[in-house]
Length: 447
Image 1 (cartoon, rainbow, N blue to C red):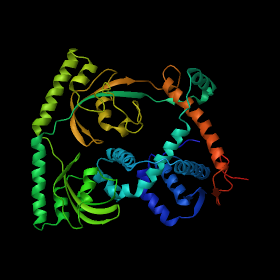
Image 2: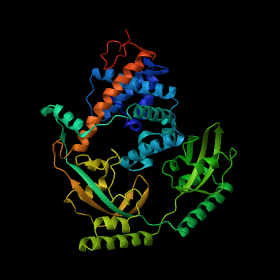
Image 3: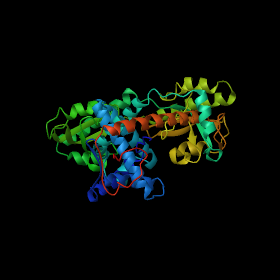
């Protein structure tokens, strides 16, 4: 049994809501948790979106996966495993940013799905919370599983030769990035501008109109700045302001990590609230980006002349906090590792694809403008192709880490299956038609 968190969860939410309106029969129950036919239908929609061929047998497999997740959640609750609102928000924001980077912007994402980011977050907070609880429960179950080099070798030898996977070309990249500094002058300009907008609102200008005309928040500007949220969903200064307001009151200008804000509270009920919001983001001027480009061009010339090594250049010039102390190595935002599948590179990061498609290992690009969609920042960067492997059958020399991970996952699978069998025996499980004829990997059907 393998826990698969729904990587395309947010891509399917609009279909999920529709499915649950029309299909609400209980397919199974694990402990206090019920699984609806609509939950399985949602999984099938996601599989179809991912290009998988749907078969009748998949319904049983998907139900078993959902029962397993619910078994983990049930045990996590018994063991008092909790996740904080901050953890849920961070996970949700990461998923939204990945989708945002693929679609192009938050506004385009909202237009595509017909829902605001706040509505997406509100809808999926409980789901993501349960996923994180299940993930932590599974981590605790398998925390002591390790593999030795002999285990890895034996695992590889047991794989039939015709089943050894073909590994696509894998790429690794490094970068040197300079983001222009936002100075006190730029911050003050943003604050003064927003103060002027607030004065117009207080003089009678509709807040919604002011938001549509001025707000730099792509997620809410087109909605007149409207946000529907619950406590824990927004950054702390924002929520502290929301919960200090009376209904209809407009806040003073305040600052968060995103820029300067004003809020008008529409309604608050317990931890839920509705408000309108205007964000003004301080921006650097052309001179700042030109200065960054000049610095990075100096770096580029020194690299070309061999006056400085790549590692030295990263430390000296880069101000990207995520790569500066790691030789500039870029993490794949989709997989979380440091390798990129050549066949998927254009879909994951078109900027890198265009810069490096004709490079040899060790080559680096000229300085180019760079838009960091995840951090919503613009800068200048040099990209270096660190490594490229040719397509090949997996082997212990080139792919030891991959095979080691597979061997460890197999040991974890055995531990998890034993745990599932033990927990099923002491957990209330009910499976309804038409799933009572399914053949499951674990003994869910108690005799």
